[in-house]
Picture (cartoon, rainbow, N blue to C red):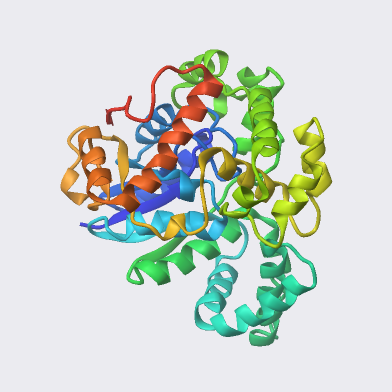
Length: 394
């Protein structure tokens, strides 16, 4: 038996995702495991629709099992996002490959990832130098890797443009995480088809999830129906009656920021370099958009700022991702073999509660998922909490 895994968001699931799963299935894998974010996604924003609906779409699209990626990882940087997924995948039986979507030359991606792995000291030194020049972490990392690549491969074209696509950055982090947690797993880079990650164009064979979400914001989700292969009517209903209220989210965030002390902000996962003082300095402003515009710049990107805001809501403090955790199986095909699952993946609420009761660290990470579900449900007018869930079987 050989199994393949994917770390994903499916925000929402579209024809590009189905293409990837079809490509994996065609290679003869016995099972496809998807590790998927839950209530909030990597941008630290509420998911387009609830995790149960997205997980069901994945099973209909060809996945055999969908496992929830804990919120502490699902809303983190690319590195932690990848590492959280690999912590789960490394325990799944008979996983031989991790599939990922890349843009451009896959050999370049593999060589850059090898630099992070095999030339870690040189990379760390270059990264520090770039950060000291005032660049954001992502920009500094790209500059450091591009510089080292040029030294190691002087006869090859520069890879500077490789870092313009977030998919490639994730591929590099996935491969680094494979090396860290399960080096026997092979990366399977599948070329992304159609629109780029943040492209909002609405024609062609494939569009991005961003384009679908943007169309929905403009009241034109119906124009995207051919790109949503499963549960279109359910998704429309969800967006009509249970879409997260982003304006309410902004107001709650504004209040949370005004209420929080400098010391509380300092303890948050995404706070560093005196960000707590900068945020408190502008917290008198009466619009979250004004606050974001006041602090965003070369050093701090918008996603990092919003991740820090979510940290504040959910209580995600530094060091949380070093702790043991458990998570749940969201969905699977009928007849799926539960024995393939790692110990950290539970199939019932009773199992999750027992794991949390047995280990304080597991309880701390689980509490973030509980908080995230409560916040998401409040924003979406959904009744229930984290434990109002049972495995979906298709």
